[in-house]
Length: 208
Image 1 (tube, helix red, strand yellow):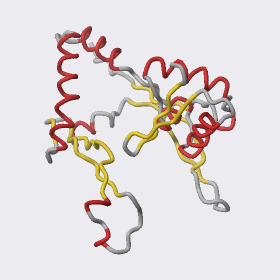
Image 2 (spheres, one colour):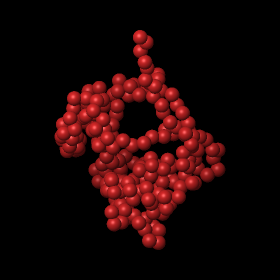
Image 3 (tube, helix red, strand yellow):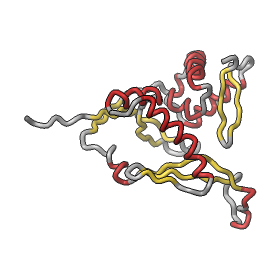
Image 4 (tube, helix red, strand yellow):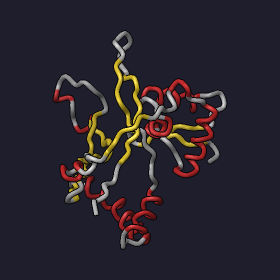
């Protein structure tokens, strides 16, 4: 019997690439995706492996506690066959012309980075992937009232959202997502408030 090869469908759409005003318009392909929650992944793993939901949660909580501790103590963490987690450093300003200006006081911790191992990265470069274009909800068509409803529900589940959330949920450019986030918190009677955590702004629903 011939072996059946699983086919993987990757959805995409075509978007204009942001350029300075007056530059020729160019375009790029952007993947269309949805987000799977940790709860959904846990249930999937429990159904398809011998790992119980309880074991999954225990390991996950341990890693969430231990990984930042190891990174802040100067260690990169390499998961064999998976990749390496490392601490991302940044600076308070950009375009330094004098290297001596980059002192310890100028440095910030931007977050956690990940470099996939070559073999692990290769697993998504699959011969059985086919691409299919889907037209997305374009930036100019975003309805703020509908966005408020969707983000209110999102905040009930996740407590807050970021500009990256808007990019993923509504398929926006970073520039457009930032503009809409500012509109949401600067409206005459705003339904969302903004806070800064580290180098990232988070947005919370008032009253949720």
